[in-house]
Image (cartoon, rainbow, N blue to C red; front, side, top):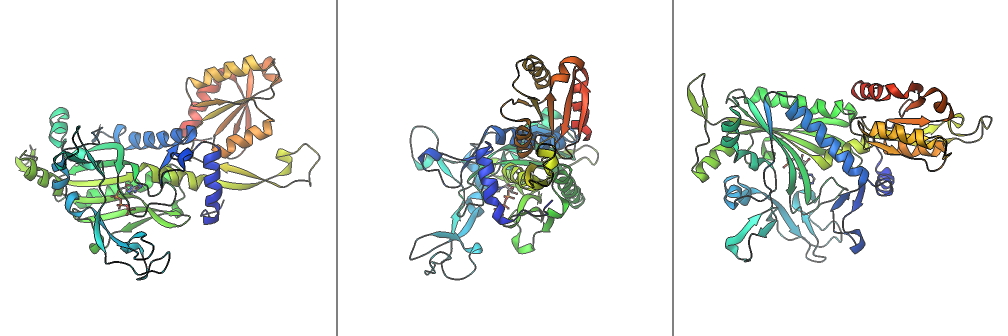
Length: 452
Ligand code: ATP
């Protein structure tokens, strides 16, 4: 297996993504809209599985977490309190010749990277998208599309505490869209202007914040590993003091080795009591917490693991891509031993992330096989995301499923009609085993939970 996907292979990934229905250019028939992408039939399943795995691990499986789904549109004062109106900007420079714009911290020389023209002085460019609420387009009606989901959690702090009676330490998790008018989006779905975040705000007693930051860094790092990303393609990077966001006391980024270099998947920040204090000040609502043990009122400190759904999905997809030599005996007829050495494109996506979990493949389109194959398909789709495929040779169909990362293929052949058994093939080892149809669901459920 290659340890890192070469940049040159990005073209193959882009073409596979489009051909098999993972990711399409948005508004493609109109020439596309820069750096916006649509998830196709398989992409949407993959992305849902990523979100589901996150929600399970971070919200459902923990006693100290609850979930939330807050609105994208929020009161404009929220963004004054949070510091986004004042601080959420990137330094922008413009080329005096070709008028292209760049982030000055991403330009290495003092000349335009495209045409070597002279660059203007850097000015701050606010990344929030503005829109208007109501039928009148006046300044007073201006609102923002949220640039992060976090603030929806802070403004609901009291609501959640009152509704759930949660005691510190506890956290609130949320998945949702965020929008940033990035100056230089790019690298496929890595940096876009519309994206999804999965965020936790974890409220702790001041003084325990440093310990909780490290716990969350470990938990989140291991989550990526547990879902199949090679450990050597992940690293932790601590922010330098001059790089910290205006609200942060300490921050670690979990980075992935993308084909174009290391890039952030998730940031885990110690946001201190900055946000609750500011919203208390700006809204007038008391956002302190009453600690029944110490009988004190205080602002909790906040640890924030904030990840991108699209970046995580991309990393899982890239890290799983592989091209393996396919021994001739496996794909050619017996006897053509020395003839062909072909390549098997296989996506080793974790079985819980794969867009299709089981494929049901009748050996041929022979009409005697069809009713049983359909019966197996109807049985399995009750429990798994299942695909039925009877087009072309069985070898080709295995290849198609390997390419999209389907962990299990179930083949119905003529023997099935007599013994009510089917062949189950594992994607990674290509190991095959015969199983009674009556046991299929239980066995596959067990394999899905524990691996082959
Ligand atoms: P970067 O330095 O790459 O711009 P950031 O530090 O501004 O990212 P955060 O504000 O920490 O990002 O946002 C949390 C997460 O949201 C990031 O780790 C990333 O996964 C995701 N994210 C942020 N901006 C984008 C974007 N433009 N496109 C896709 N995902 C994004």
